[in-house]
Length: 357
Image (cartoon, rainbow, N blue to C red; front, side, top):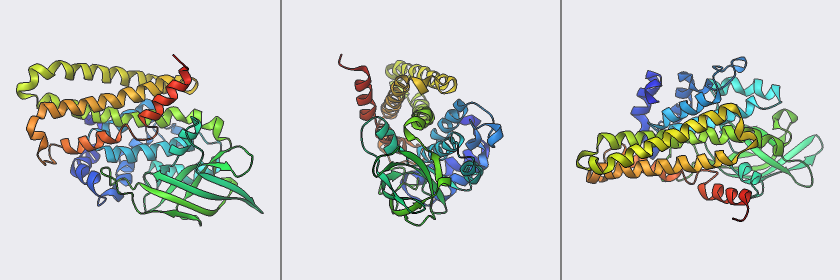
């Protein structure tokens, strides 16, 4: 819950939540602020520089940030997901080079694996290809959307297909590598302070020390529970914030909205409890369907919560009032169904797995 956030981070989020949503002035401060808070270390083994808490602690930390700023929480998710990839990599040299700086908030980690998660479900082909050269591989392709591409320095995870035959793999590409080109920030309607951009990759030389995983097909399902579980925290935090606001602003509508607010709260907390238990006991690795269902249910709970806040606020919600935060939460809620994997993609995957009714 948000009251458990470190005081310095909580004050920073309250000061910059509106700014992070509508422009990028404070965007460079987000990763260092998260690093100073120590929250990036939640869910990371102590032996690797973490707090030694379960993965659910990382989910709770992102949710607490999302109560105040979905933009900051989205950056947190990208940074924390990249750290998880390093934890699960067999490449100790790569982990040694990057994990400490990522957990300290000294360097941004970007999870450019949205395309890979869609590839895993058979939705689209990988957007980056490798071709052999005399002393290794060269990469070409495009990542159309990646978050936390901090101009002050980042490293991004990408999934790569071989030009001919060969097993797809996952690599970590630093921002200063020859052949890696970052676009300007994408012109988003919200979450504009998240350093979200596209990457063009042209003739990029790849070394064996860049490998996160040599076999993407076997590795991606192992990290998918963390990728999706940590992402679910965005919905949890936003829903909690809107439900809290709806309770405070019910006014004359309390008699009508009281039960829907409490029903949505009960559903939200039940889904959250199931998510936290599942990411900790490992059940989602072999059985991802319940995780897909929770991702859908939590996003829908957040949408419902924002609708209830609107109805509880009445006409006041239509005033431009950053202090109230409703307009920002309305924009933030529009993002939850479309962040990869989107709700239509997840529903399509559920239909495929269940077969004809």
